[in-house]
Amino acid sequence: MAFPITRLRRLRQNPVLRAMVTETKVTTDDLIMPLFACPGTNIKNPIPSMPGNYQMSIDLIVEECKELFDLGIKSVLLFGIPETKDDTGIIAAHEHAIIPKTIRAIKKHVPQMYVIADVCNCEYTTHGHCGTIVDGDVDNDLTLDTLAAQSISFVKAGVDMIAPSDMMDGRVAKIRKALDDNNFTNTPIMAYSAKYSSAFYGPFRDAAESAPQFGDRQSYQMNPANSDEAMREIDLDIIEGADIVMVKPALSYLDVIRRAKDMFNIPMAAYNVSGEFSMVKAAAEKGWIDEKRIVNEILTSIKRAGADIIITYHAKDFAKWSK
Image 1 (cartoon, helix red, strand yellow):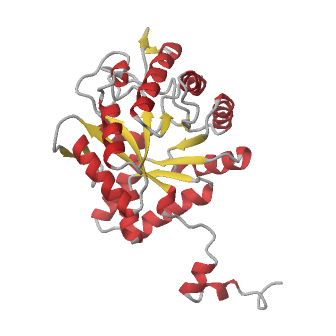
Image 2 (cartoon, rainbow, N blue to C red; image 1 turned 120 degrees about the horizontal axis):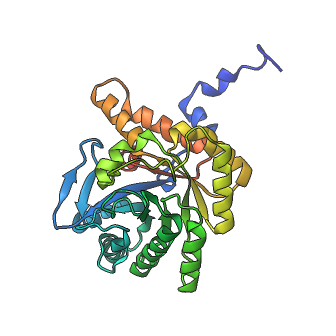
Image 3 (cartoon, helix red, strand yellow; image 1 turned 30 degrees about the vertical axis):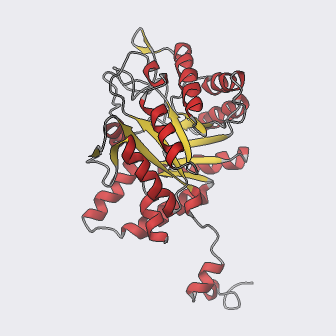
């Protein structure tokens, strides 16, 4: 039936009724908060391009995890800033490297926190690329060995989930085999499956001190124009053993999230990345937008597109607003 018998505004007249018929709801259970661990004690270095985010020493990471858990954020994604770097990133796999030490500390003091470790090399290499350089480009297969070694080190330290973000071909299979061969068959992999070569990563590179020292990452990260290719990437990661697949960034790729969810119907993550976060913060500081409403709308749109899990720097603020 049509107007005047059908009036869709009837269901919008009252806030209780609007809540009853809301189709998409974001809760703290959907969110993962990224954290940046650095050496030292009582260190809290502000990240100028990402207001409210910090490079934190392990002792303060633990305190942050306690606060996050009390707010209802029950999962964090760890990135590391090492004391020294090398040519391959294998330094990240050492038992006393920054991420294994951080994992052990969180698990000791906040055991209920679900800890995910980003597995990549860009933070740990002298050149800032995501793997071993041969003839001026990242060598795919040599890099796989480093990624597998990092993954085993992190799991031995107690991490709950591995999240490879490098975009090397075959890395999910390599990591899955390494985990299974070492009796870590129950450790899930959340693959950055469709990770685009995006301008939205700029602030993150300040946070993780991971800007490439030459060239760019277009030979391994995806062309923003391609969504068919994203489906191939996701399909291959599922075949190789990924338990969760991810699209990164989120806002400019909502169509890719929706398409992937419809095509594969597998748990889907989306990364609401640093540039998306920083634009909101900058506009809010200018008084140009209502930050709380904007953040709620952004997160709702990502979930509505098909994401089951949202990695976002807004997680802590969202949790506070939801109390």
